[in-house]
Image 1 (tube, rainbow, N blue to C red):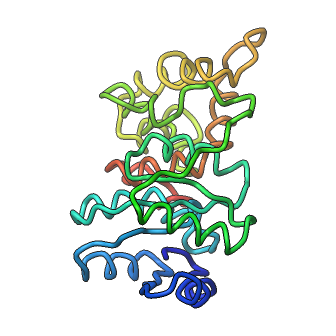
Image 2: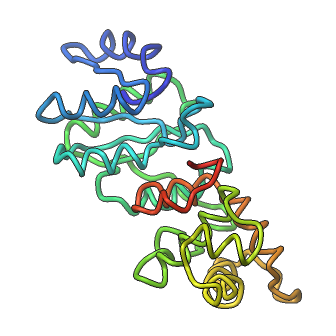
Length: 240
């Protein structure tokens, strides 16, 4: 149970599920020690967004998945959501990760969680809830940030989102790119992604201000993506 509030539900889970052992990790260090210290888990339940001031920009459910993979401890993962709009980008990636066997809402309560754990422990995926949101069909940022060009776009976006850049000059320094590349963040790198996702009114020009505002709206995911893909060097005060 990888969650700042893991101890709150560990006891009821053990009582409700019978002969099980629930290991709780309330921060990144505890999680790493738990993973390294055992061969594998039958199920890993993790918060998608860690609702703790010292963790919400530094560790999340996608880090949990990556840690399991990097330590060669494969396990089926259940992700717990709070229902906030800021989780959307994280969910878009989570649904594409093969380790994720299901997503459930914390607001559903303990009984659905226990049933979800039973289902996943038996090797079955949870039936996904239909996505009826207006943004359901748009390409995920996870899919956009692939290849050399995608990684450059991710670095530029992460530098802006974390507060490390405020203009072309500071963006070039923070993202460690040429001034020419930084100058093309709007026209060649981030602007096309924003347009492809339907997040810009085509009747208006794509401006630097619009790109910087977009990076702010997606800041949590952009910082997470950079941190998890070897680009933490671009992050400023928010993500560093």
